[in-house]
Amino acid sequence: MVLPDEPFTLRGGCSCGAIRYRIDVPAKANRPPNFTLGHNPDMSDPKTARIPCVAACHCNDCRLAVGTVPSQVIICAANMVTVSALPRDPKVEETRAITGRLMKLLQPSTSAEESDARRPPYLPALDVLRPNLPGSQDTWLRFFHTINCSSEMFSRAFCGRCGTMVCYHFAIKVLVDYVGDPVVMPDSWSDCIDIMLGTIDREQLDQPWMAPERELNFNDGISWAKAVAVKGLPGPKHPAGLFGQFVDEDVVEAIAKQK
Image (tube, rainbow, N blue to C red; front, side, top):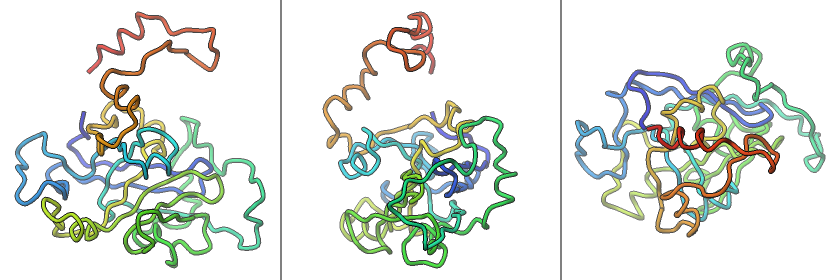
């Protein structure tokens, strides 16, 4: 399933609320094609991947960074994303355990608008989601580099207060230089922000169109994770955390029949 055709805004953030973001998704007609489709992709074909795109990734780098297989992200053009990061007192001991959420992210009644009114302003992603920039300094944002140590090219951003991995930034130019065709440099944007899917606010994430529409790096995936992706997760389904309680089979079958 793909994202709705009309413009909309996704909201989300880390577990404690120190990092919040918005993704302003334009109307479908204004969403660019994925930059790995080569020159002149057929935009009339509904199967042509556009940006944003919800995907699962089986690569080892994402697996280790997120701690799950596969990782799931919404791939965005950086100019669609803005970020609000709360300030951190430089005197706080970074090895100290920190307690409590700053906003009730798990409550359906949480008002994002009300919370935003008490936050620092939302800034363009490329001014915040990279190290050594004014928008990220003295905030709870932390960064980790794996593939490349250049903050201009690659970086993973996470919350230093609660530890939530928030996103992965990369400059498309790197792929153009190292991969070549069919990677094409977009006309009006230059960087991608892959937002971790699980950080999107529950009310929006629960929509059926937020399910990943495709899988990346499938050949590199863990064998049983690829089998689950193709066949589904085997074994009993428990309604809560108690192993002695089971979801009725008719409920499981009804969900399996949903498209």
